[in-house]
Every structure is written in structure tokens, then in C-alpha cells.
Amino acid sequence: MTSILQCPVCREPLLVTATGYQCAANHSFDAARQGYVNLVLAQNKHSKEPGDDPEMVLSRRRFLDLGYYNPVSDGINEAVGTVLAGLERENECCVLDAGCGEGFYLQRLKEALAHTPEVRLPITYHGVDVSKFAVRQATQRDRTMAWFVASINDLPFLDTSLDLVLNVFSPANIPEFSRILKQGGSLIFVNPGPRHLNGLREIIYPVTREHAPPAITEKAEALFAPATVARITYPLALASNQEIMDLLAMTPYYWNIDQETKGKVAALDRLELEVDVEIRVFKKKSAARG
Image 1: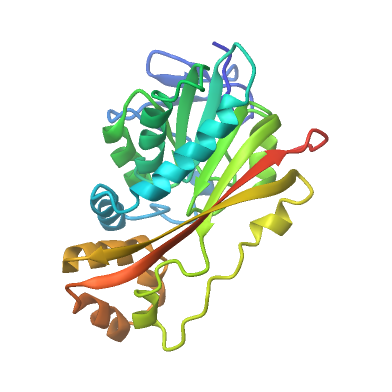
Image 2: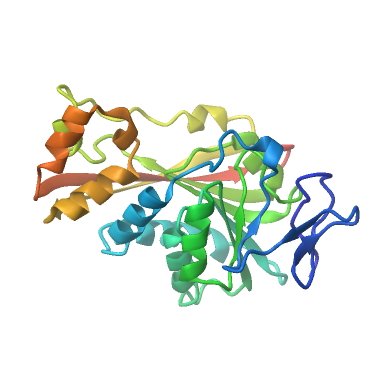
């Protein structure tokens, strides 16, 4: 199989070896015993351990495994299935979850597409996250997928090598996504809707404003066709302090609120709130250049 991976040192293709990957210039990257490969160069790290720490990763895994965000995952799977069902080619399709976290969405996507008869293409799945701890957890979900520690600002993929990029509640790099997508490839971007997590936010903030539309629409204008948008909304009731604190740890609020406010949330053993999520499907313009 032709390599789609790119050496982070010299930008040449990375080829599979017995222990990991290596390029023609002999830059080599060995797989960890858990099955992932770290492609973040030491000089490019902005901290000793970038990304989510082990506590945040475990909080996210506990919460997501309870099924509270399954409707969000189902909506993503439907959007991806629709895109891939429209592809007409015989060779395999390459999918990337950019900012994959602990692998919840990519694992459920693989399971869903395996039972979607309209999608007849063979698919290879790749997950990238800058958090080593998150990627370690992802390998526990499915070791048959290719998991990498890497930054979305320097993705380890060759130009125009991927069919679809998924970006769920994660920072986005539009030029980099465009670079790695094939002409006509798709970006599926998932962001909080206007009322996402209202209920929790009303405890945190004296005045609760709706989430503003994401800046990605304007940023993507030059490289992607205007997005189609689907919205998923439903009520959610959390019935334990553990669930509430795990949800808080998944959000930026965990780091942005003071100890007094965090204490208010920590005192709760029940919380009713809203899930409000938007799924945007962008298509790379034929004339775009990454």
C-alpha cells in the first residue's frame, strides 16, 4: 500500500518497518508498546506533556462510555456515511479524526460504517491527538486503527492523501486540513450549538449568553465550499456528582473558572442541562491548494 504518512523531520513519505515507521532519510519512529507512534518532535513541544492530562482523559472516557453523547456520535456517523456513500472509487478510503482524544468518536464511526451497506469502500482509520495520554487510551478501544501523537498544526500526512477529516470539539487548522485532503475531500467539523451545556453554564456564569457561531465558516471560505449544517439537541439529566465533575473536566470551563465556582459545581449531585451540537460538512474546493 502506498504510504500516506509524512516524516515530521524531512517531509518525505514514512514507510512501515518491523518496529514502526522510517523515511528514506533514515528518520525512524518506533511504536510504543501500546501500539501508537509519537510523531511530535521534542523541539516542537510547548510543554513537557502537551494536551490533556491523564485525569482529564479518564474523566472524558468515563463520561462518554455512559452513552450520554451517543446521539452526537450517531449524527456524526450519519454525516460521514452520507459523504462516503457518494464516493466512487475502487481503492481504499482514508479517514482521519484530528483531535481524536481517547478514541470514542472514531471507534463508534468504524462500527457504524461496518454496518452501513451504502458504504462499500475499504476504509483505513487514523486518529491524531497531541496528548500522549489520550492516544494511549484510544489504542485500548481499537488497536487495528492507526493512532499517532501529533499536532493538528503539523499533521503527519502527505499532501492530498486523505478523503475525510473529522474534527470534533477540538481546535482546527483549516489550511492544514486543506493540505492533507484530496481534491473534493470532506471536512466534518463538530462544534457547540448556541445552547450547548446550558444548565451547567447557568451555574458557572451570572449571565448566560448563547454560543456564537464558530469562526471556522469564515476561515474556510477560501478553501472549502459552504458547509451544510445539521443540529442535534436533546435534554440531559446527570444523576451523580461523578458524572457532573467528569463532564466539567471535559470542557474549557474546568480551567477557566475560579475555585469558588468550581466548588458550586462540585456540590451538585444532580444536574439537568441541554446538549446542543452542530455538525458542519465542508467540501474542499477543486481549485484549492493546501
